[in-house]
Structures are given as C-alpha cells and as structure tokens.
Image (cartoon, rainbow, N blue to C red; front, top):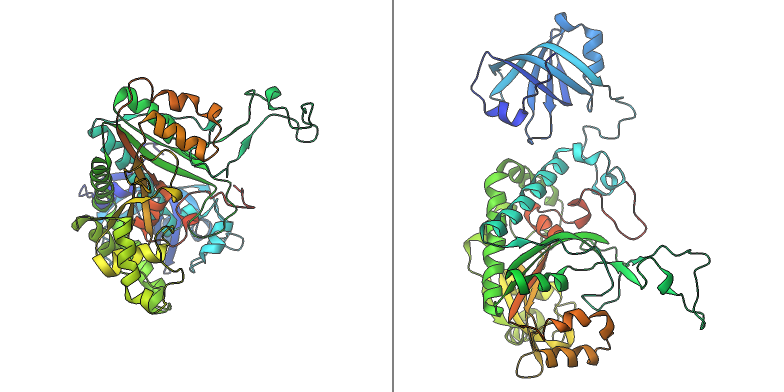
Length: 482
C-alpha cells in the first residue's frame, strides 16, 4: 500500500470522483448489514467523518470484526465516489484495508455514550480522540496561530522571556520554587536558613508568573514586542477558572499610553476571535449544539447568557464601552441587584470587582463588552502608572459576557522616583528588581501593555465551562498526571 496519506478534511471537499485515494485514521463507529460495513473514519483534521464502504464478501467477516471497533486504527485504499446515502457528500469504496492497531471494545474507555467532563479528565491521554476535545484542540491551535499572525502582521517582535526567574512580577508570592538543593539535607547558613548561594543559580529562583517585566525591556529597544509562553501560579485553587500552569499572551509597546493600550486590546481580541470563526466554523457549530443540549437540564440562571456563536458575534459587532472604575462602581451601587441585595459581594469604592459585578455591566447594563480603567492603586500591581489624584492607576480590564475579566493591563510607570517609592511602600526587595528600575534611568519612555490568559480566551471561544477542559493536560492542585 502506498504511504502517501490524503487528509480527510480535504477529501470531504473534493470533487475528484472515481480516483484512488489513501486515507488513515481511527474508526469512530461502524454500521453493518449482511453484505456491507459502513465505517466512519476520522484522522483529526476535521470534526466530520469520512465514510468507508467495505464489501464484507471481499474482506471477510473475521477481518471486518477486527477493524469495526471504536478506536481501531486502519489505513484504507479505495475509490472516492459521490455518496448515495444521507449524511455525507462523498465516501470511499475500499479496495484495501490495513489494520494498524486493534481496539478492545470491552476495555476501551471511550464508548459511544456521552461521558462526563470529570471522567474525561481522568483519561486525558484519550480524550483528544472525542469529537468535543478534537474540536477544542483544533480551535486552540487556530487561536494560537491567529495570535502570532496578528502581531507579526502589525510589526511586533516575538520575545522569548525566561521561564526561570528571580523576580515576582505580580508580587503575590504564589510561585513554584526551582532548586537543585537536597530536599532532605539542604545547606544552611550560620543562622539556620537555607543557603541558596549554593543553589544552581546562586539565589532563590522560581517558575515565572509573567513575562511582562522582561517584555518591557524588549519594548525599550524594539518598540513593539509580545510574549506567548507558559506561566505558573502556585495558588491552591480548585475553581473552574484556575490552573497551575497556563499560557499567557503579553504585548508591550513603547510610546503607548492607556488609550493606545485599549485600542490595541480591542483590535487584537476581535481579530483572533474573528479568525477562529472564519476557520473553525464546523467545530464551533458542533460546540454550540453541544452547549445547547447540555444546558437544557439547567436552571435558567445557570445557562449561558446567549448561544455560542451569538456571543462571539456580540464581541465582534459591538464597540467596547469604556469607563472608569469609579464610574462603574457608581452604576453598580445604583443598580437593582445592589439595591435589592442580590449581589453576593457588596459593592463599594476600593473593592476588587467580582465576576458578578463585571458580568452585570457587560450583559445587563451596557449590553456590550466593557473596558474599565483607572482602578484604585491599592488593588493593582506596583508597576502601573499612578494618576495625578494619588488614589488610582492607569490600569485597564477588558470584560466579556459569561466570563467577566479576560484581559488585564496598564500603562506602566516610567518615572523612576514614582516607581522606586512604590516598590519601597510595598516592601518589594529592590535587589531583585535593580535592572527593572535601571531602565527608568536610561532613556525611559511612556509604554503600556496587557496580559491575556490564553486558556481564558479558548474557554470563551469554545463555550466550555471549566478551564481544565481547554488545555490538553491540566495542572491543578494534587494533579500532575499524564
């Protein structure tokens, strides 16, 4: 048999009828009558299956019984023809079938029935073979490609920032330690503390929580950079929105102010969502139907605010509403849910807004995506540019329906004295950020950037409800399987 494999996605669109084709993939389902086996084959290139028609008198019942089971891997040579049956435009009349790997129908963990998401996480080595996770992974790939394409086409340079770092960009302290010291008998200093001078890097180091600080260094030379890499948080959280390992997209742009930053964020996120809608229409349609079926048994208040494709168009078709945090708090305080005590978390100036507050602004009040700006400095990171009022900073959060915050960013504090004072106020060790401070002494410039958690973007675009289901192998507390 020839090794030249043709892609099922391409064959489903082909009009080269009566030509010989060679396909390879995994059996999804098999229907049989006494004479013909109809095998649904998929190779991962599309959510749609290619029907293989196998004459039992040619291949023999014993061979057909070997290859008919879900999960079996086969190679097929045959003739591409117009399908006479309903449900598919083309099919392949098999002339040769090679069995690569059998699948035991008794022990194979993926059966024809729908499995729970919890069960699927326990078999993450197999779940990409399902239609749901195949669709998610293809959309994830498309979104990642769109990210790189957008920035490349707009003159940004891709900067690889370090995964191992000696600084904490967020100041939260929830970091994974990186060390080669003996965990049982580490070297100690005279006062009994672990002597990190004897560690591999000669000081305490961690897995990064963000590439932003190093990204700023690149922007101070290349003007427009972006990072797109893994980040890590040692936060003991088991919510549907948190992972210990995830991917972050972080552009940094010299000479941009807060207004420029908002314009970039809106244009960027609309582009990547639009790109996915254009190139993943079959997968998105499948996920929308899946979501509709899944939510039929849910209470109205637990359902998504709108169908999946409508939600995506909602982002593309509406200009994002822009207002300050202070204006948003005023709206929330006067809102009916606040007046009637329906918010779980009370609203007042100075609080970190919760998802319920953010979603109210987007879904009920403005009915469009929202960008909030100028947050209280006490709830934001040290590097954000301080406003003249002494109370707020030039921060921004982009809020989406169903999910709340999806992007967080700011204009960065480019003034040395202001930044130095803020670092001292927060008791951040200066020795770990001397290089960051120094950039404010040599050719400092206004600059701005933001961070977008890639899994949150995939979560939004796919309509999934748990972030563990949009990354191939989730890392969460007590879970580093696969």
